[in-house]
Image 1 (cartoon, rainbow over the protein chains, first blue to last red):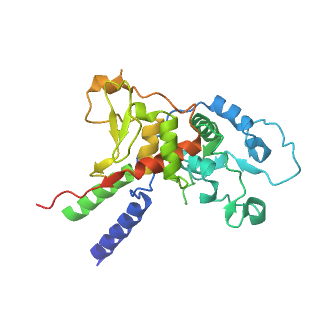
Image 2 (tube, each protein chain N blue to C red):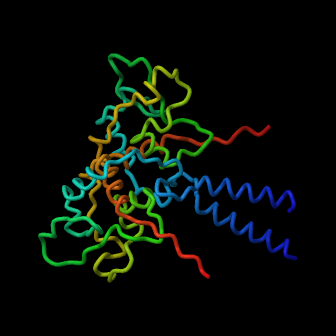
Length: 147
Length: 144
């Protein structure tokens, strides 16, 4: 009986894992970003005026020049590792997963992120460096063991 | 433990290794939709055709062909994911083209392909991937 349950569990786990690492044409399998430069990433961050709408924890950036609006915080302590896959997606495809913890109307419109699309002006190198910059400001905290 | 269970565990371990979830992993990577036509235009604009042919695609002829042309597209046994294509475009040394003489395509283990990351916009990269992906055809191994 226990044996059967174990098998069922293994099967379920396998299915979930297989779904998680989808390997179809529209998958990130094989995606490897070259090394970025966090310092240049910080420069790109202000060059592209990301600081108008974002705060980066632990980084001194110029305050926004425009009218008051919601600032989305990046970096800081996190319980989930922010992979470079996640970060690239958030930069070049922000509507794929809209940030949580903010009033909906402040960050989205018609189901799409309010973030501007920078893909036409951002070079690939800027994207790589931005990811290195942002990744260096996240600190992963492993969940505490339950006693 | 039965052999089948042990085998399952090994299989799971392999799968977990395959979808590495560390900071330097592709987990969560989702490319927005690209435009195939614009990708083709970008291909010419960035002069990729000086070193690459694309299966089933007419590209302007070259006056002086290089010592080697690396072919893209065509029939493949494995799906070319957009993850792989992005890597080949922006990080060409990660996995060098197979089936070519080493000294023609690499120097000191690095791809001879020019680094375009400074000149290429993200939009161009997305469209290039859409263009190239449309030129690959997955074929199944023949049934014996």
